[in-house]
Length: 189
Image (cartoon, rainbow, N blue to C red):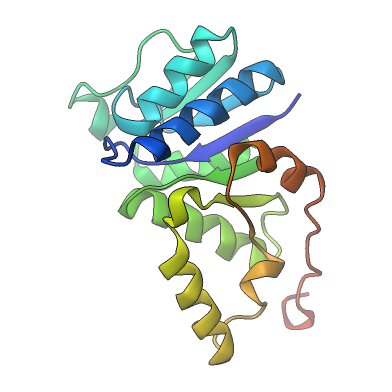
């Protein structure tokens, strides 16, 4: 059993297939008896994910900054809930409580969380699997940009050394099991 952190949108997607992939991932987390660690909201893909894990008998840890609880978007009835002082503290706790990270489609917050864990991994400060679920090719343009940044010599590693990319929820847990961390760069040791 693992704590699987899922970064995803607090928005409702217009693409029904992305929502279906989110629901399938939630079912798999519960079936495997893993624990979902997520941002704690009841809205958007985040709410869908938590609802389905709980409905299927799974455990859910929600972590939300105090500033968002006042907007009444915190999900009730979670296995564990944490309120942090800031968004930065929220990310720290999400990272600390997780064994692996799965990135679903999302916006600014999701991208911020993705790049936080990728950056920490590249510096040797977080040594956990990072998996992008490229549902409906949502991240194709981002992956093209990462390829371009690599070609320009701007990344310490080719992004595929830090991030595994899958297209179906059923592929996520194999990707986690087979994830190989790159060595920490010499200049960081």
